Every structure is written in C-alpha cells, then in structure tokens.
Amino acid sequence: MTVPLSWGRWPYQKALDSLKRSVKKIDPDGEIWPRNSFLTEAFRPLKSDLDVTLWVPGSPTRLQRERFLETLKRHKMFFPLLGECNAYAAPLAFRWAFVFNPYERLRDPLLDERFTQNGCAKIKTSPAYQSAFLLRQIWTDRKNLKRNPKLRQRKWSLHLASVGKESSSQGFHPEKPFESLLSLCLSELLRTQDPVWIYQRVKEVRACLEGKGPLKKSHLPVSFAALYPHLFHDARAVETDIFPPLQEITLAQLEWELWGLQSQMLLRLDPAPYENHFKQLILFCEKAASTTGTPTFLERAENFKELLDQGSFIP
Image (tube, rainbow, N blue to C red; front, side):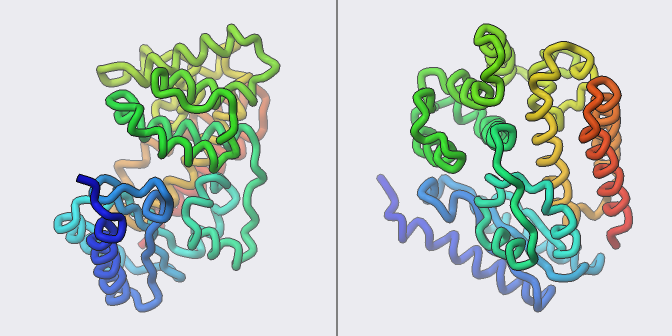
C-alpha cells in the first residue's frame, strides 16, 4: 500500500520540530533544518532518511557539543529514519566554503542561502565536479543499485538532472546501472581518451562496486584508487600512467573530503581516531604533487593540515 505523501511526511515533520526545540534549548541562536531527499521529489515516506543540517553562528562550547550529540542520539532512538547530520559552526564553514562541491551545495538550499548572504561564491561547475558528485552518489547508493536498480530510476533521474545530464543519450540503465553511470561520469572529462581505455577503467571500477566481499587496498585497481582517493588513500596509484587523465576527478574528490570532514568536526568529541585518516590524505596529496608536478595537490595537503589543526583545537 502506498502511503499518501502528506501522511508520510507527518512523522518526519514531528521529529524535525522536536529537534528544533531541542537545539534552541542548547543554543538559542542555533538552527536545524532538513536537506537532500526530504526537499525533493525523491522523498519516499517511511523509506527515505531525514538528513539534517545543524547550524550555529558562533563557536559552541564543549558542553554544547556534547548536548547536540546526545540530542541527535536520543531522537535517532525514537525516529530511526533520522539520517546523517552535518554540523557547522559558521566561522569554520565560511572558511572552507571554497571547496564545497557546487552540486552538493544545491542539495541544501538553506545552507546555500547562508553562504550567498556571506558572499561565499559557488565553485564554477565543471565536468570534474559533476563526476565527483555522481561518484559519491554511486558509492552511497551502491547496495541499492545492486539489489534492485529499477527502484532507483527516479532518484537517479533527479541526480542526473541536477548536473544537467537528464537529456544524455547515455543516461541511467537499470539493466547495467554501474556501467551506465560510470560511463557518464568519465566520458565527457575523458573525451580525448581512447574509448577502449575509458571502457577498461569503467570495467575495473564496476568490478569493485559490484564485489561481494570487502574491498582490500592491496587488490584495488589504480582507477578505483584515483576516483575514490578518500576511501583508501592508495599513493601507489599516482605512480602509474593511468593516474594523470583521472587527476582532475581525484582533486574534486579530495576537495569534497575536506568539506565533509569539516562538516563533522563539531560532533567529533574525540578527534584522535580521525588523525590517521588526515595523515594518510596528506601523504597521498604530497605524493601526487611530487609525481605529477600539479601544485594543487600540495595546496590540498596544506588544507588537510590546517583542518587537522583546527579540529585539534575545537574545545
């Protein structure tokens, strides 16, 4: 039985209203709002998660951070469909707005409004940022794409429309979901490459996404390590001739990771478990810079160092 949309939204809205009241008790100037599917046609009652954004205009105290985290945990117990919470302290968010993927930024209209009011210009769109956006969505949706890709057609039509690909002749094909989406990610950026070379990269990455067991760093193809550098930070990838054509996507993915890590800092009460992730990303960027001669990799290494320091000093 299909749940009417208005009825289906009711428990989500109740959970959101309760969260808003709780946040105000912790910080009268704090705000929390929905983002992603709840705001779009992709929303499916009792199936979609309620992803939220927590916004505080200043720098919250340690006690406030603890209370925010406890509030989210408590609401999750009573409303299991409460999804991911991105949490921002305005000064830190404004500092890192320059690495916010423009397509992901549009999925959070109220956050986009905050940045626009503060004069934070959007990154110019490009095939690399399109590819990074789609690759992130593929990774997040990989289990559903394996189980029943036909049920994901509506969601993916919205994703493709958001990056201007809704009229693409390639599009999303449920009978071969990973191959069709990966080809779409790579074809425009790599249009000067031999089609056979592109197909080989698609085949390698598809095998990783469709695999039944956990991915192991030692067995990853270079193409996967280049397209998803934040997952395994495999520096061996930058030493091969496969890496240079893919490095624009690698950089876009590293920028996304910078933004993503920043968006979780307020809710990380103990930064120690994440320090190794930062250090591996820094080593990856430094290796890529020395191997390719691309200075932007070195800039990103310095960005990760700065963010790591900022995380260490959050009260």
